[in-house]
Length: 209
Image 1 (cartoon, rainbow, N blue to C red):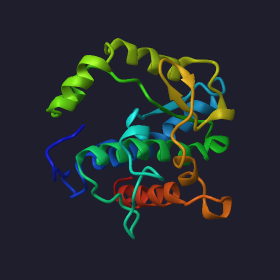
Image 2 (cartoon, helix red, strand yellow):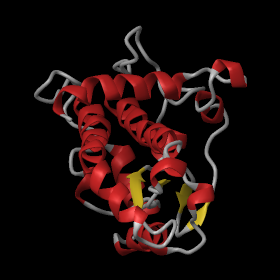
Image 3 (cartoon, helix red, strand yellow):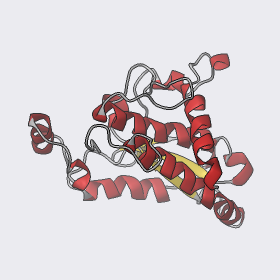
Image 4 (tube, one colour):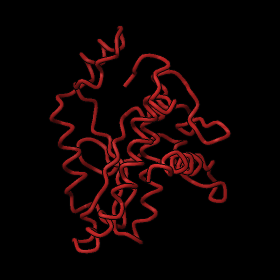
């Protein structure tokens, strides 16, 4: 979260997008065969992939779509704070797109906002905004575990609501207006941003699968 401006991963991708989106996408694609086999012999809806979202989806992502893409489908560099928001929106987009495969393989995908927590995540953040956030908004780290445990174990999450967005401290919620349009294709009245980003992620990770 908020690394030094201009930080990139080993492949030249903005560090937060590379870490939070491409790394996660590749890991799931590598694990997908064993997860599908496990889902086939397990209770329905019990095999889940939890994609880490954040309140930054609503507060720190570009409006209206939550992400601005270049011609290739790569998120544009919007500065470290908005890039972080884009990386969290990216996890929502990945969860929703992989959720489309749930009827085929039985794996449930969920994006969750663990809550505003006091952890090492903010170690690079400095200034008045960081100080006020720490004093007024952040909660104990254990609260995040409540949200994640609910996401992993709640019987309220089933195959039917694969792709759900879970909010603190364990319930299905929604997100900022505009992002819903990004999740829909132009044929559905949306902007298709989520689909374009998903295709870019698959292209970037294909060589390692």
